View 1 (spheres, rainbow, N blue to C red):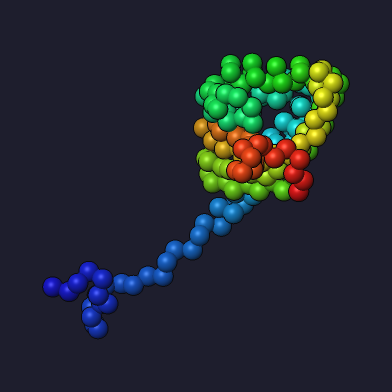
View 2: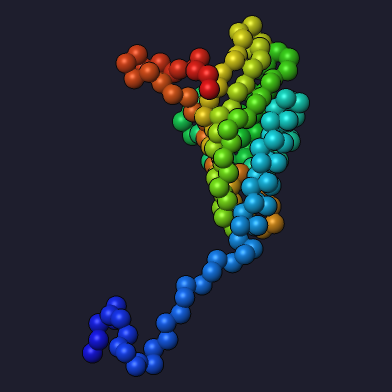
Length: 171
């Protein structure tokens, strides 16, 4: 008996076929998904700038997992997201400027990932000025026709020698 990985014997009837070519629609679908995800990211930035809580939460899954730059370490669910976002938006005195930069999107048929840098500028009601860049990663799932954010992670680097967050970094 020949080893399963051995080459076929000369004259055997075993057919050797070329690997199947990738489906031509796969890159097109990934590109369309990336466009849809970039639109969600842009809409969220516009919602922050407008102070529109409902628009900010519109693309979150009911079971979203949130890892924010502020305590606690983890929040779960749309109700927790709404509470946190409402407090955050209300903490500003006047407009909040938001910019996303260097966003990369990788999308499959029903799961996608986006990451990049986010910049927030504004003045808190305490009078403190905010002008900070941070890292942002969003995980998406498409349970039907629409992409939803299932994972929202924001973080800042820290100085291990001093144990302090590095809020003044710029790209």
